Image (cartoon, rainbow, N blue to C red):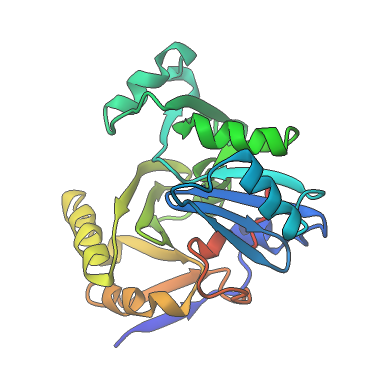
Amino acid sequence: MLVLMVTGQLFLMQLNNREKKSNALSILLHGDGFSFCTPTHHHLYTFEKDNLTEKSLRSWIDYHQLKELNPTLIHFENEAVTVPEELFSEDNLVSYLTSSQKISEEEEQSFDPVKKTKQKVVYSISKEKKNLLKAIFPKASSSHFVSSLLPDLATFSEGRVKKNLFIHLRNGYFDLFLYQGSQLLIQNSFKQVNADEFLYYLFYVTEQFYLNPDQFDLYFLGEYDKYADYYTGVSIFHNAITFLDSKQAQRDPAHPIPYFHHYVSE
């Protein structure tokens, strides 16, 4: 039997539970489009053969009355690599990434300092997409989504006896973070299109790292109806799962990255 433990508003979720300012705009850059997220609406701009131009995007933004908002760009296009601050060198960005992924000439490398955890998050971003959005929103700040999550995951895990496994579900992928106390042990992203693929990779990770169910607590970032089969499947090996931010309203069940629909960055 699957036991769903709903935790209520835990410390981790204080970022998401902050009141989002009325003029705030999060632009999520993912594989097939831009998600423009305001406090009340979500607008998806999908990439088609002839519409990824500054003129067409400006026209679309004006139509949806998004131009005057203060945006934050959050990158989901590629995986990130987290490097401890003492081992980091800006000269080695490419080396950090090529050990786990291919790098395109159409991309440039960037990194975010995560001061709270003394880490650097390294990732690649599309030059075309970045320049396009920067031309329209020149004052926009930019970061990878992993940089947003690490400080709160570490703080939440600090002082806990068991390991903590956090799972973030989104269209086409899921992201996994394993902590022992405040120390990040594993961080990875896996492609998935259904619950079976998700469970295959999840079980693979737990077996590779000898994680018995009684040795770790499992947390999903958010609870969404479209992932109900995923939650049920996890009960095969873990009889209690916890949803962080479980009381947050599902403003748009079809959102490709639902946890970040209402995300408020510091």
